[in-house]
Amino acid sequence: MAIFEELGISATILIDGKPAKEYDNHKEDPKYREGNADAAFQSKYIEVVDAAAFKLCFTMRRSKKKFPWLWKDGKHCVTFVAAVDGQITQEETLVSGEQGRKLVWRGYTAGLKDHPEGEGIVVLKDFKFQAVTLVEDTDRERVAKDKVRSETMGVINVSVFRSVRTGEEGLRESTSRVTEPNFSVAEKALNGRAISHATGFGDSHVLPTDDSRTAILEYPDHLPFAVFIFRFRSRKALMQECIIPRDPEPTYINGIEFIDLTQED
Image (tube, rainbow, N blue to C red; front, side):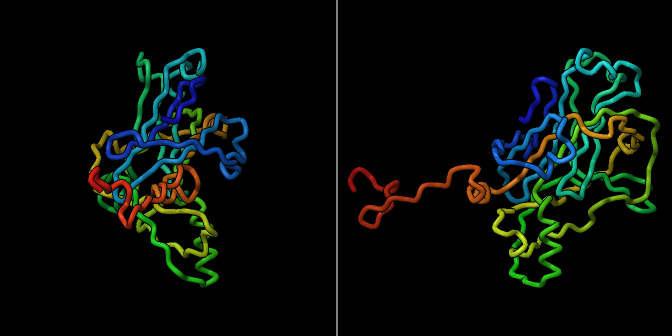
């Protein structure tokens, strides 16, 4: 779990309902630090497998001392904005004065809310990890396009804002950022970087009417006060990035792998 103890705020990736294994990113992260220098910042790697469903879990510990503006009225909130692969953006307004005396507030983002045109409903498309296919394509235009696209592929950026609820809107027509994700990338565009997965969609569910309405929010500070970065990779890709140690090479004795030797051998 990525957590800011001083703020009492956390963000976790749940894979098939269980917290993902996290690894600290000890490298510089200028892309996501730029413009957010005053925000609390954490950067993690997580290990993933093909086709696994995932959701984002956010928590915040109630503290009038740390967040006095939450108690001004029922309009002041804390909003977690999740950008997945640089294309899918979802908001979860987790905290407001309307949520009573809960010690810890908790919220989830499990997928992309889609508004099919003309159907008058909202559908939630579950998130899942989808393997990326590398292709040998040297076309300059394709490589340049994939280079830009791959910079945010396999990245979940969670920014936490102070927000004010100014209204509420009902069903809208389709506003999905991504309809047909492209999981093919020109290998030359990666320049040696290890990208293994992107975000796809699994099952779809029609949401209840109460979950289909969207709050209209303003962000008075304009910038987040906390940022979580999660990069998701396969085990092999984590080894290539030197995030985890490589598996040791097997030892052979007389042509037999050492771990397979019995006492008689």
